[in-house]
Image (tube, rainbow, N blue to C red; front, side, top):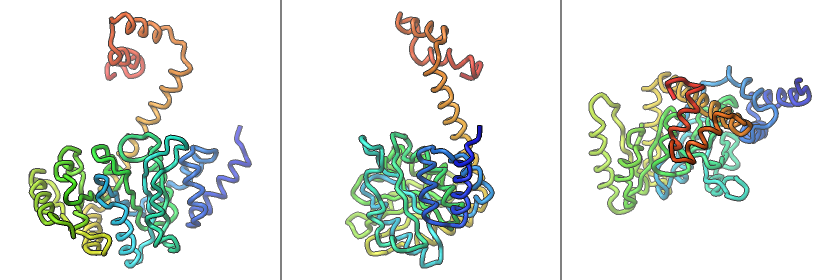
Length: 321
């Protein structure tokens, strides 16, 4: 039976969200992140309003100065008349599950700007540098009328490649002296970069880092897009104009192809997440004789865990399991 008061409340929240009301956007994000009552209604109601915002992913190793660079980039884009949503994905508190770092503190200079909305999300144990709710929150900001949505990852290094499935343009930030050149190869973040940034360019060896990264880009092979390498000093605003130009040029070159690829990637991830959740619930509630038989086989050493799982899944997926 439909909960009419909840539905009415959800409808009113949706209306305020689509009008671009910051308080409604904040409430909707909390609702979605906690899978609260009315979340599905809000998500369904925003679908016709999506596809306007440019989504920029900012990732890279810890210590590269991502948050400072994002703050400088926000200032430049505001000068260009863009409204922005910033989504900073932080590590989780082991006690409360909330975001620990709270990037809003580091972006305090934009706190009084009505054209900028900043929100921190906790990873809540999700691997990949993002929160599992990140894609939905990006959609909420898009539906609220933001021209640009910037997603700054947690800075987990090798797992941060997931942001490329969410962003139209992915900016990978490095810094001299952190071994980022090697890290880029190990993590695969070099392959996802649409724009490479060497931040803290006032430090020694910055030019050497730029040269090394340019050399590594040549290993991507023929047929791949040219990736600019831009030196910035975010604390002084140096190179930020060039970075903004490079992001906008890349977005224009991609056209609608990036958004189509992003939608397909989101559908795949959602199907996988939904299937995993449904199966997890069934396993928790199941008293399946077949499952107990597999358990006994594992205990006797007749079967390893991976093949036990494959045998169980074969009932759902056939030979594809």
